[in-house]
Image (cartoon, rainbow, N blue to C red):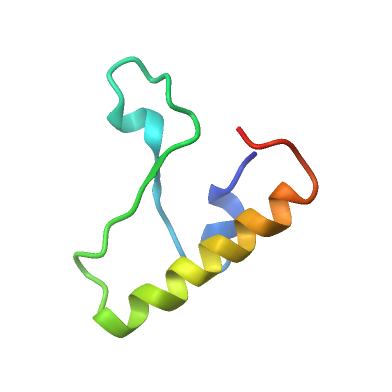
Length: 63
């Protein structure tokens, strides 16, 4: 399931998990950073990712 393009389209970005896995085996992981986000921005961004996941899970098998 490709989550990054629809997330970026909605103003949320993340780094796919394999970039942080020496074996690049965990394709179901992602890494979020909130270092530049205000506290009040974090929950809506997580909600956006959750909505994208729900939309994609309804159409496809995970990972």
